[in-house]
Length: 463
Ligand code: FAD
Image 1 (cartoon, rainbow, N blue to C red):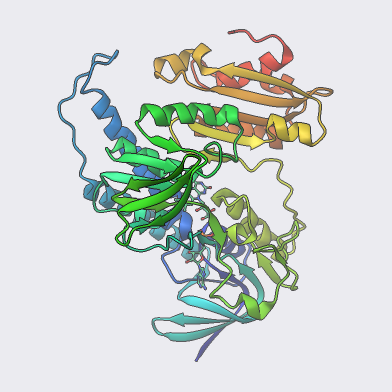
Image 2: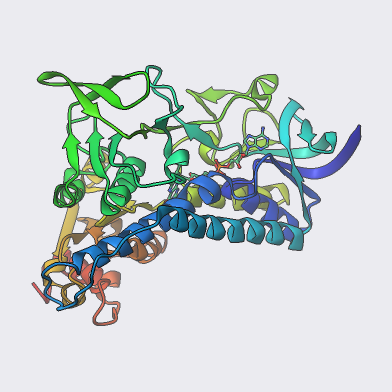
């Protein structure tokens, strides 16, 4: 059997793993990275990238449909249609380009990519089943980056018409009736996209509101937009079981049981760390509930074994995994690093979008801060008006005593791109005066950020 000896073994080539391997390679560490699928992980193959491609196509189609009727812009379009198979082909071509891009970056940085499924034998040895036979990899350091998988509802196992987000990204046609179980960001992003492409979408959510991880002020505009798109949202409603061929779903509402017809039932009730199938049990690591426990250096309970990304729990986001991966590679190379980020921004690519960075007003209060809060609505922002994007606002949360910014949130069209400014302000330790005193280009939505800071200081200029 072939044996490879190396300094660093990375198990899993998602955003956490491949960034760790690239950085390790840059630092001159002899690195091997293993994955059974094309490099890029969930994010690139069946997550962030393909979902945003589909959302873009849906937005463009909806726009063209909008122009078939009366509209203030005076644009007229006749009978647009969408061929989902072509859309999927385009989406797959982007995924493929990025797969090759990641493989190229690994090669450029001399990290060896081994295609196959790995199983840890002990804390320094991994057995990989490849197409060319088994390979043993012996490493001084191991980075576990096996990611996460969709959570299944026991009474609604995946298969046939009951699908996870993975299948929802490659459907062969727009389903006539799509029932989405779970009103979190993944379900709402995909549900919105399919509604825009013409599906009759129903969202089933067990909690009393959608997007329960965001505060109600942020989720309210999304709820209104779902309604405008004709999406039915059933709150306080639990999915129970489907009929044999998955064309009807029984749900438990506050008024008793109800049956929903469905062409597809999309289950998006969360993701769980992938802890099985790669020999984790052989390592007997300390767990933090159902995820691998790590400290602020991503060290596990076993010396020389690190864990990063979704395998280590929330927030399960690609950019957190990447930041952890980069840090661990530097730690292995001898640098003194700790994971001490002030902000891990989160974006919900619904319509309108939500972006959050740092603490919400409630979180700041719970942390014991007295706060000053400034909210600036896009209805008072010139650029938003010119884009027909007046829904939403920017909100800034700061300490009352020294005006240190603790958190920034926004909801509105295209606000995802504001996340960089928000996170930078938090990482740089900005005060309200810093944001208020920075010239923001006119006319841009980012002026709403400056105005929110001015508002918190008591002298907003445009409201
Ligand atoms: P993963 O990306 O899950 O990668 C793990 C890799 O390990 C996989 O490639 C897997 O094949 C491999 N692996 C597992 N076991 C083995 C083994 N035994 N041997 C070899 N290889 C193995 N996050 C965002 O930040 N922004 C978004 O907009 C966003 N949108 C999303 C949309 C959807 C539909 C989904 C499902 C997720 C989305 N996410 C988003 C979440 C994001 O995809 C994850 O947080 C991110 O991919 C986690 O990276 P990771 O490196 O920890 O693991």
